[in-house]
Image 1: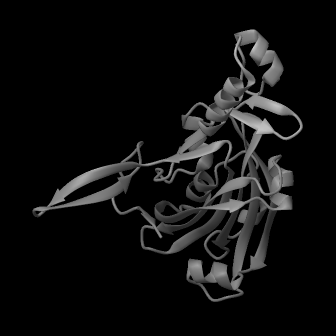
Image 2: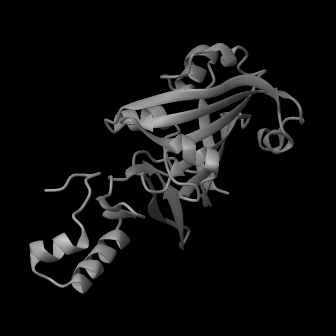
Length: 242
């Protein structure tokens, strides 16, 4: 039995092993690839695909670290940058602060079971979390730190998901080929009084990540509307797609 990451025998060997034609083998491999069960690497052959890490698009706003821990997955964080910078215009707009306002810039590479899975860049108003740039977040949840150190509890968030191609730097850090598909996630998180506390941009490996949502049908005064909620926790009006 082949395990994730194992290389499959070549087409000729598969033909002999199963007593079928090369056409049948190629068709079978194409179907397996389309279903995401195998991956083909140019010049190397076909390999059993690693299972995708499923995340809920409408999470409980506990953060990636806690979300993965609750699923029994071991996470490691490599902090690539952690400093105070003037807020770029696009960041300031999302955080609803003047441009050039000091923000904590946090750039991290996240691993799941020792495999690089996503790159995430966070920006937080420095005035709300002074000294955050000096706190070790290599193996600690950012959201837990905000709650325990600053008493800041994230109440809701707005998220946008898309697809992008990996640039050379992203590919190097994530261990993938340049141009490989990435899932892009942009989010703004808010405190209970609607103060923006964090803007982040994350890119997840397309070959190892998958988002799931649950759609709930709600009847309201004779009408029917569909809302999005987490499969783990009901969060009405807390995770809106931009």
